Length: 150
Length: 155
Image (cartoon, rainbow over all chains, first blue to last red; front, side, top):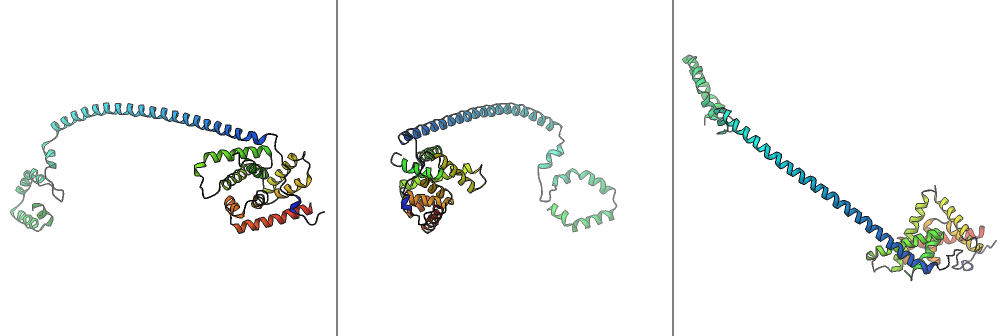
């Protein structure tokens, strides 16, 4: 057993060897391999772009088809809604059309009071003078009612 | 490639042992170099960069083999068996034993020892190859040398 091992006895040598002419061929082999991979990548990219272009085309056709049909259906729908609207105008009561004419902050329309005038007159005719006086007093003290009147 | 192929091949061979594996890793290294040559920064020398890629590719190759093995020791044993198979014809037993000693080292120590002892790279260059501090590399080299000596005396 060598008790004083010295690295100099080994040197830089290794027990490995290479096949004959290996270093002469490896450069060309590597270049060929690189070229082969490049072509493979190119072919994969080409396939990818073809697939992407096909999908885009199909998607464009679908979108085009959808819009064309949508336009047609919207056109039909417009006719129907127009017809319905004209019918509704004819059949709608006059009071309903005046609902949007004037609105107050409280959401109560002054026209609504006018529409109910006959009913108020009827109600007042059934009341005695004292009751009407009491109602007039109450209305003059009613904050909400006064606000509407202003 | 012609200028560095032999040095890089032997560096890889000492890590992966088998010629076929070393050839594959060498090809992979140079293909990577061609592919990423524009990323090469002039501040490091080209051979430092080459060693770095070759080392990383070799480790990646060994790690892909590690999937079948359960431990680093098992991988080392596989490499030692491969060494015995490939160098049986040459028959220089002391050289085989020396390589056996290197293959039983932990990965970092093995890499530092190979780059310093065989390739004679400076610690500054090795630190760029392995992303490690000079002091850590010196320690690893010292430990590796001691272990190799011990192995050579005891086996």
